[in-house]
Amino acid sequence: MQDQPSAIELLRAVRSFIQDQAIPRLEGRAAFHGRIAVNALAIVERGLELGPAQDAAERERLEALLGRSGSLEELNRELCRRIRAGELDLDTPGLLRHLRQTTLAKLAVDQPRYAACRRATGEPE
Image 1 (cartoon, rainbow, N blue to C red):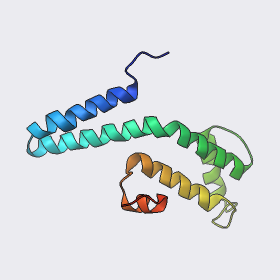
Image 2 (image 1 turned 30 degrees about the vertical axis):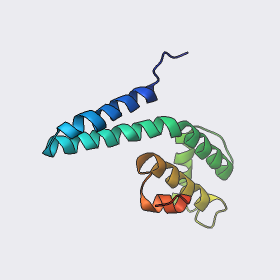
Image 3 (image 1 turned 60 degrees about the vertical axis):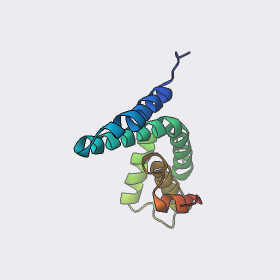
Image 4 (image 1 turned 90 degrees about the horizontal axis):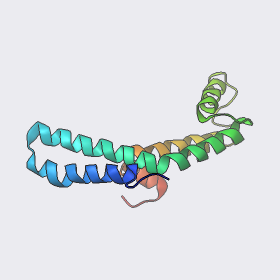
């Protein structure tokens, strides 16, 4: 068992401190870099929260699409190889769905407020 607080809780605390305490006292370039730091911490936080489930879902889709098992990295390499070789294209059942879901998962970590992402997932803008 891990001690408390968790990594996510620590990230939230640091992000909250920078956002709520430090940035309001900063000006110009330092305030700008503070906002960048807050954004970077939020991305890491979302990655820790969402990443394991997203990776498992991506791997499951790839295994079904490619008909084999392997690590996520191996399966993505195989997917790229098959697309380059012309063995898979957008007419391949499941490929477009996989690419779309993988892209939306990445956006959910990196840019969850991105308007196109919100539209695609049905969230209000």
